Image (cartoon, rainbow, N blue to C red; front, side, top):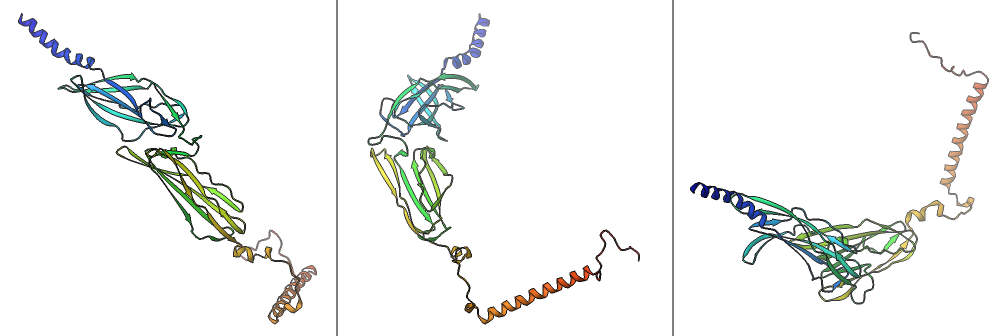
Amino acid sequence: MNRYLLLLIVASAVLLPQYNVDAAKPVVRIKTDPASDEPVVVGQRVRLILDVLGQDGWANVPKLPTFDVPGAIVYVPEGQATRLNETIQGDAYTGQRNEWWIYPQRSGPIMIPRIDVEVKVKFFGAKTQTGSETIGTKPIKMKAAFPEGVSSSTGLVVTDQFQVKQTWEPSRTEVSVGDGVVRSIERKIGGAPALVLPDILFADVDGVTVYRKAPEFQESNNRSELTSARQDRVTYVFTEPGTVDLPSIQLTWWNLQKGELETEMLSGQMFLVTESAATEASPLNAPFRPINSSQFSNLQWWAFAVLLAATILIAGHRGRKYLRTACGLEKTPETGSLPPLNP
């Protein structure tokens, strides 16, 4: 009897941890913020929140899966995973929360597909054990609409923080043909990556050549608070004299806090373009004028006389040399003949 009781105790000690591992299935929950039944503005950030929880152990997602949402941008913020502790029906659960940020780019239904998530659970106890399981989430359907007074998402920025700064280098407004002026525009937004900031249209201007530089992007993430910046630069090179008016630029953005459309106007600049000194002094640009003998000064006449005398001397020397050679008075060295090494 004692022998059978001992075997039962040993078998329970071996099998019970394995039984607990199999019985503790991870909990996977997914939701959006704003909720899927709430209205969303085109360009607005939608947080897709994934929670994984393990009973009597710590559940986590070792690698966050990637997926596409038609008509939207999907962004994975860095350093946003947080630890969770919950009590469900009297049982302790520990896990992890991860996020994706979805930015709708068109009006109409937005469908977030099923996502297959690999969940690992590290169970607590004297002997550390781990379990792994892939669980699929339910698809989520949302609806996005344009903000009031907006009919297109082209050039629209949706955020609750927007700053813009413009600089001109150099700052002077009187320039010459061939000079260049650099126009820089920096935009900063909160809660969105820099890639949602649209291109700025720099219009062509008569008398100016426009050189556009590739934009520069910056992002900083402080405790899941994302701040992004984009800097656009363009160089205007003036090609013709006159007055050049570089146009203003209008930027619009939707203020989520106020729920209204706001406009930022970046003023243009007027420049007075003159001929460059090199262009004015060029002989090609000087009009033809016949030379009058009265324009020569005494110094110019002396210079002309010296130049003429030098030309006559050089011509006479070359003529005498030619005559001596032709009459055989001056021998021409034979081609290919070399003097002896030991004369």
